[in-house]
Amino acid sequence: MHGLIVENHGDIPFSKPEDIGPETAAFLAVVSRRIRDRFDVPLGINVLANAPIPAFAAAAASGASFIRVNQWANAYVANEGFMEGRAAEAMRYRSALRAEHIKVFADSHVKHGAHAITADRTIVELTRDLAFFDADCVIATGQRTGNSATTDEITEIASATQLPLLVGSGVSEDNVVEILGLTNGVIVASSLKEDGVWWNPVEAARVKSFVSRASEGL
Image 1 (cartoon, rainbow, N blue to C red):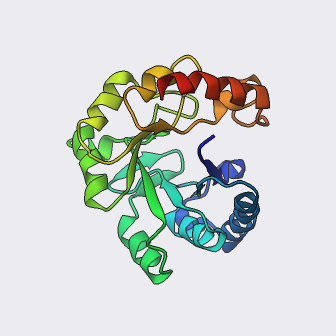
Image 2 (cartoon, rainbow, N blue to C red):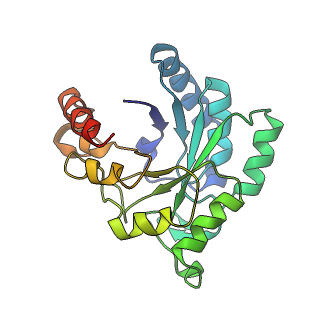
Image 3 (cartoon, one colour):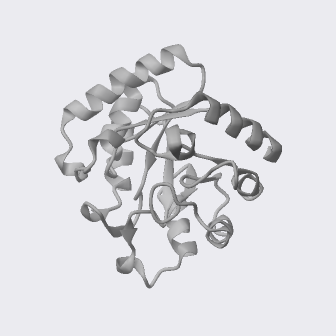
């Protein structure tokens, strides 16, 4: 794989950002540093749910290269409740850490939520807002973990930005070549796990098979 992301997916049900304790960033920093010391690939941090400040803290402490944020701009109704974009405070926090080298990978039209609050704004406009708020990369997702974004949605998001575009859910051997033909890369987890279930351990044979198939689209 070309990179790794560490996230606290085991903390489900996820807390809202203001309820996440410092222990989350501390544990993620320790684990991520050990991973970074062993593997020479870019490392990212994702703190669920939608918590860029502890993600920046863990990334700065561990030497990670980027964070992933599910709702960087605007707002939506998530599984955890009302969720606001936190770009302004997060970017000021990154500056305070002198960690401007840590990039922001931000979801557009994020999964696991309803966007009725922004229903008067198209996916194109929501995607443009990510660039306006200084994201470095845009991520397209499906409706929930393990579901892929549709070709139409990927194309719509791609039309709205010059930033690198990734698909961040539902990628498998069956669709990776097609998706790589439309994007700059993919974030994959569930299909690499035993039985294709996200909470199971990674299965090495699945990883090797996926990478072999993905190489046809590169």
